[in-house]
Length: 216
Ligand code: ATP
Image (cartoon, rainbow, N blue to C red):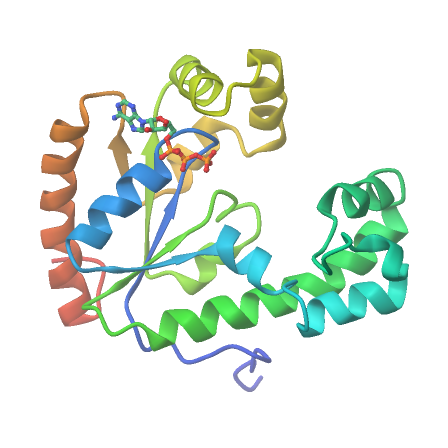
């Protein structure tokens, strides 16, 4: 059988590190260190918001489907209303995912290829859940015990432990992510120590990217 051609699949030009971790694990804190090291960050959560900005194909399709009522008075998407519409209606949820997933994937692939740093980091809390790891050469899990995840998120977002626990329950279990990841960075330690370990990983990634491999 001939080689399967995947539609919309860009040739992997840049060496891509997929960075993931559960809620409050420290993805943003660690992305900031990658940025300090001169590495471009592509953030899947930011892209998911960009594809529904005013005048975007995504938002125009949502308006055509749900009506103008789905907007805030200033013309931006009312996410709470949209969430309520899809929460109890699996057909509407499927419709929305069919619209947004390709738009998000296209923008992610485009931004990954536009990066000019020695390699590029794709940050995605649901990297494995949404199969975005297939666009990555290597994966890095930011890992903390669940109790630390809860404690830090409650403090950061001024939310309740119960709410954080329900989000954790909706994400892939920690142990499964540990199994799937190529590297694991323990973020249950002082950021200065985490930074030192990250700098060592970064040295490896520079070599991998240079040789376009995942082994030295
Ligand atoms: P989310 O998935 O919710 O976006 P995240 O994985 O990006 O979360 P961060 O926002 O980076 O997580 O970190 C969660 C909180 O923990 C933040 O308040 C951050 O400042 C803090 N934090 C991150 N790493 C450490 C650390 N090593 N020591 C102490 N606090 C930390």
